[in-house]
Length: 259
Image (cartoon, rainbow, N blue to C red):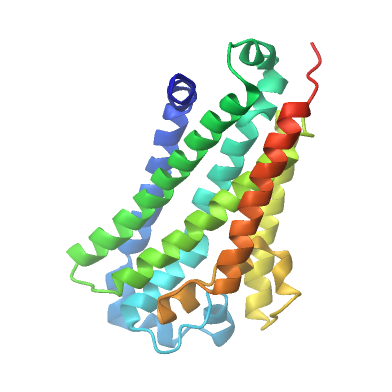
């Protein structure tokens, strides 16, 4: 618990900043809802644009709007945060040359890594949860009633995607000792994956080709419509999460740190 508190405290300021950004972005979306509803803007959007966010056929105007504001950029907040948190667990310590002090503590390496992963899970949950809460309650406060159960499942899917990306990043970071390089490389890959998923959905590309982007395992429109996370998406993300953690523990226990 001490290791958890120390790492959580070290990241508390950054966490609050990310939550503030998440809340402001969420509010910028919910506060534009009235204009979207009153002007029937969704009827004027090209099908290619609507396809970027999944199949919204049959959804209510409120649920269509929620799908659009989540897919337009909201998904990047918890995913990018998870990647940055994962890089701070080991790579940042190596880059700052503070890892020797960390390993000198009278605890096993496994305990250190477990505590830090626990902080990552908690913080990502708080960031994603803050967006969900603003969208859920601010939309309702304005009199817009969406399918909130399905909306919540979208955020569970997003939470799982964020943790999977964080775990894979953590595993990769065991071989990256330069924090700035790691940030540029990993954030670039995530943003590229997001752009690719949008382009491929707009072009109607599906199947094995679309699977190259991690965001293809977040079908916002499909979850909003069906009220369930696709089994294949859930299994893929869970396997990526488990594999990333397994590799991280294996590599961290064997990693040699230069003085």
